[in-house]
Amino acid sequence: MTALRAIARGETFRFDSLRAVMAAASSERSGDQLAGIAADSALQRVAARRVLMDLPLSTFLNDALIPYDSDDVTRLIIDTHDRAAFAPVASMTVGDLRDWLLSPAADGPALAALAPGLTPEMVAAVSKLMRNQDLIRVARKIRVVTAFRNTIGGAGVLASRLQPNHPADDPRGIAAAVLDGLLQGVGDAVIGINPASDNLSNCHALLVALDEMRAALDIPTQTCVLTHVTNALTLLERGAPVDLIFQSVAGSQAANDGFGVTLPLLAEAHQAGLAAARGTVGQNVMYFETGQGSALSSDAHHGVDQQTMEVRAYAVARAYDPLLVNTVVGFIGPEYLYDGKQIIRAGLEDHCCGKLMGLPMGVDVCYTNHVEADQDDMDTLSALLAQAGVNFVIALPGADDVMLGYQSLAFEDIACLREVSGLAPAPEFARWLQGVGLSDTQDTRALTDATALARRLGLPA
Image (tube, rainbow, N blue to C red; front, side, top):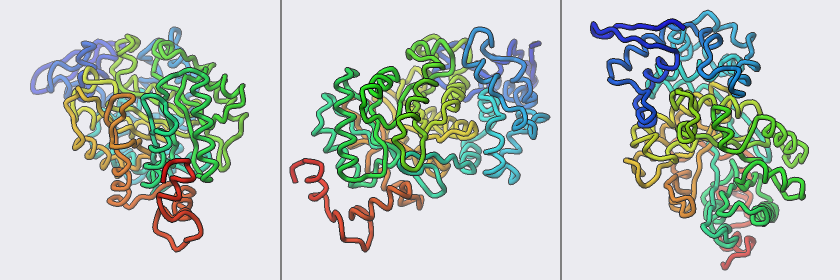
């Protein structure tokens, strides 16, 4: 494309490519500065946003940020683009789209119908023109409902992943963490372990332990050991109780190569999960995680800003009809998101962009200990996400993951978010909590206290 220019406060700024405009228009973040593509000043950022505001949306169909011939994610984006769904906004500029998204005309049904017509680059571009409150307002309109053993994403629902990681994969330590989470209403999105060892026999043992625990208590939820997709396929072949198939994904072919995955491999895993048919109320069988900076960290970003690369990862996830997608927003480190302000902005961007792409979007509200952030920042982001209608968040004992070495939300934080926001667990899970006496109920036929639940988990009372 020809060079683009904008004038801000009498100064003319020139951008040589669409990639350069997108990078300069991004909110300040350390990853783009590390890559040498960030705006040099706030004035240049304003100029880039002025250019972006006037660009026709169709530009992104004709000017690929990563070449079609050399990248399978670009080919996926272009080849699956739904032009009929795009038609209502085809004549709009990026600025027009922002105005429309904030208007009453852009209601839930309209946004759901539009999602297949939006490419990641369009979605990333419009988000760069939005304030934080705009991201919340737009995302709040969108409900993306998925199901496996319960139904996630409906109005008034805030689901949660129970993350009982243990540095030695000790089943008793994991069971204790599960008990702690269940007692506080956590675990309806998934009870999911990041294994300390990716050894197949270890993952198999963890899957069996989780499944036996779930079945013994008749919990309407799903379990997952977050091992590599190739391990999940092998475990399925061996008859292991694999509910959800997990994989980290990114926004370029080279970055996915770094994760050891290809699009055909993900398609094979999706079909294998469907064939297992372990769901009861639905068959969304995939679980994907992403995070701003992952492509840059593997030198696979092609000069594209990290937020746009993140949204391209959502195109990969969208192709396989997932139950859950979450951005591990502050996990990669200060080289990519420097402080609490950048993490909060990135979390709101990721959630809104994922929802606009039609994804069941969750967020791991988290940070590492060498980032300029603290738990107050996480409280702020989680409260904003609850108002924005996030599908799920992640929680673990004491907000401290002693295996992965980072900070997230505590089980108590989920109860607080639901209380102050008037939200509830997934409906099937909420009924289970009532039935076993773990929430307000008149039903006293089943479990009534933690001691009984501990006994059924095989723990000391």
